[in-house]
Length: 180
Image (cartoon, rainbow, N blue to C red; front, side):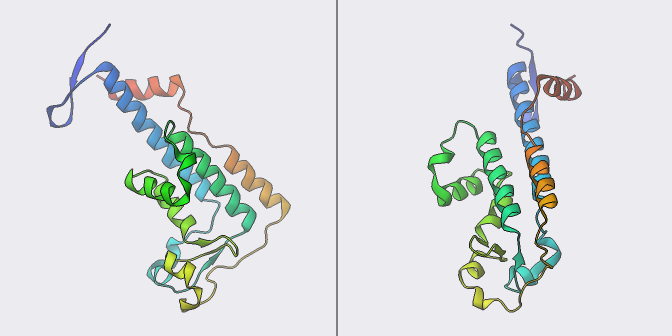
């Protein structure tokens, strides 16, 4: 058994297995961030609307099929990422609290889900405006186009082509890059 020790941040000593485990977790987090960016690229961005949007200056209209596919895949990915935790049993409030408290990479995308009225698929800048849409000072901010069947197929392909799986080869390459 190889028990090489390595000194890291603040002088903490770690053996080879601990280093490999830390590298695996880091690689999973990087893959999760890439997955989230790829999936979320399908939705209209909210950043372009800035502070006015956050403060009730209108809403973003989403296509129901696209929105549902995106968040179904994100939920599956979050469950895979946090494997072993009782995410399925938490309910939506507990799930959101867990993502926030654990600094999960899935917290930001799900914050958008919590700000969206799932009957109308209107996304507001805060949950307050979701619950009080009459308080919004403006109307719809984006140009909504009802998606064709071909566009829905493209979204399905983007959403289905993402994975959090880390292969042994990826782990070895990443490990060799960071180890002396």
